[in-house]
Length: 199
Image 1 (cartoon, rainbow, N blue to C red):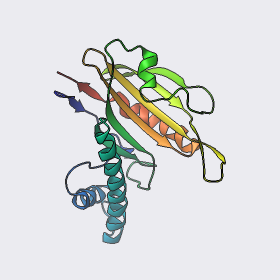
Image 2 (image 1 turned 135 degrees about the vertical axis):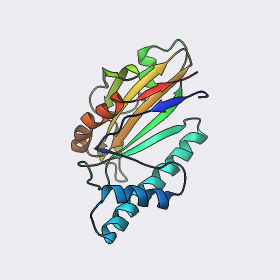
Image 3 (image 1 turned 60 degrees about the vertical axis):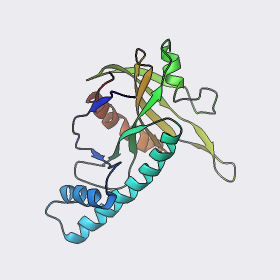
């Protein structure tokens, strides 16, 4: 995606995760901002959580990049402004898209309609700083080691650019449906601030 420009507005519930640079240094800086007026021990604990999450996201991003799916930005959802505990991670990624792709094609870029799922694939629209985007929610069914069926949830906001044959996707995946429901509004609020363009 050459000539890509992306900007997002700040959001009190979303903590940006560093995808580049020194993980520990950037995690400590973020922890200091989150834990202003708190003890040094608390700063270290929060920095360790941010660093651990960032390393995991970086590994996932490196794997996706090898598959031709670049990861541009990542955030961790906070339970409340300034409160940190491990939670859902939202990723902003790029996908190739055919110039004549329909909306159904856009959705199936990230959703396998043939995969086992619980319920329907819910598709809607969201007005954002980059125009109208598609919102998608689906609940994949996975099986654990003993064959038990587990229902997970994935949510995504999709911006197709057919002219440049590209799709920008902001998505998160959770194993707890209550957590997925709680993340819906913050994800939409974050998506509403996304501005992007290709030249």
